[in-house]
Length: 548
Image (cartoon, rainbow, N blue to C red; front, side, top):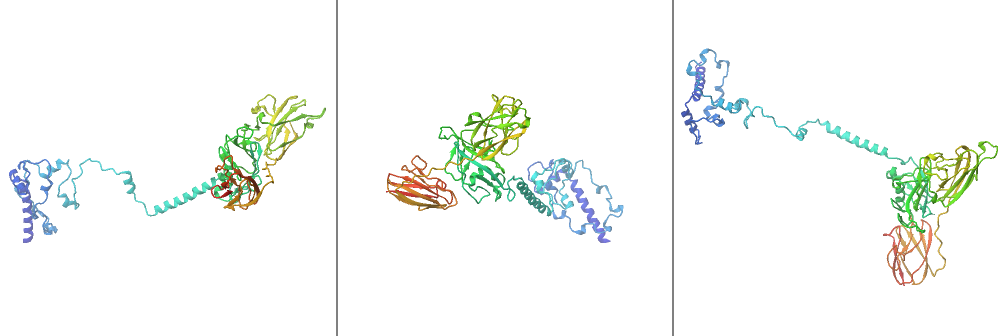
């Protein structure tokens, strides 16, 4: 009991010491401040409005909680009776008329609790004054909020799966969107003819190894071998490129030929030519994007512009393009019914590529007409030809294809491929006739003359000439026998005395198809060194010719 009483007295003594410290006069407080090292130089008796947190910190070891013994340990340590409470007025806090330092500090910061002793009570360190009341919290940026989001470990795995399947689905859609022709599905054939200034040219030579090719048969074969040849990879321009030729907006060079024709070049008759493409008799305006379909009949032309008009149910070719005329009469015997109507003649012949004006005369007492079916074999479609009355504008579709009794009319036709085309009377569909279209042989290169002084041989291969060096005498007429053992078309061009290719003094052979032979007869009078090359492999297949 003696120890308990002694502990109680110690605790009451500490409480009195704290009360006495709060009730000290101002001058003693100033002295105490100086004793703690306050050397600010200000009035020691004046009180600062700014809370001095340092003054409120424990000053000595005696002010710190000493041991666990100073804390109430048991229920017995708690005040049990009124005897343990302050007994006299001296033990009660005295109102000195001034606010305590803690109260002044609380008022200065807006009422917030900023006592340094809060550190001991809360168990957490204070690094700065408490935030003033009403101050908004700091806003996080967008990326800070994103980084603070927690994602379970399986989320990235699911995201990767979605990305992979999304890419696969996109590839499938793109692959499905690729139009025909397709690998292993389509096998198309599109016959074609090639005209230069009105003259039909030989077909392109054979090339293989691609699904879009030809067999020197005047037919474009389309059955893709690889994905790049599907859809747009089978366009007409691609076919030219695959064979070593060229077709663009203003230039054409047929595969297997060294001759290039550009818009604005002159034809032998002085007319200005341009590149044109027709499909089933219809002029293709943007042929760089044209994709031949199975059965299309193509005509590739370099020559004077063919200003035809395309209507919904017919092709209209200007009259001035016709090179000759043919007359057909429509009539029926006296006292016969309408089914006996006849065409006279009922059959006419045209050359492929020939432009002909057909004059039609209705000699009957009732109206009749004439319509020629196109290559699609169906009447009333865009590749038909139809008669119109004389003096009318054939580009006006409303004129129809009917001639009144005793009236005459005309139509201008052109067919690019050999075939038999039917025509009929729209008023009596059982009355028909036939147009026989005959293929015209391609222009052949004239055979060279047989007179020569020296005969020499040269072999053409895909990687060079054998031999690639020749020696002849000046003024000697030479016959050069050429044999193409390669898989591509080759030729020989000798630069003339000026030493420059593609000038007027060049000596040029015909194009030699794979496996075929040819001849070149020439003569050089000036001694010196000459060069020759293959126009199809200009950089890699060359040779030297010595004239001595």
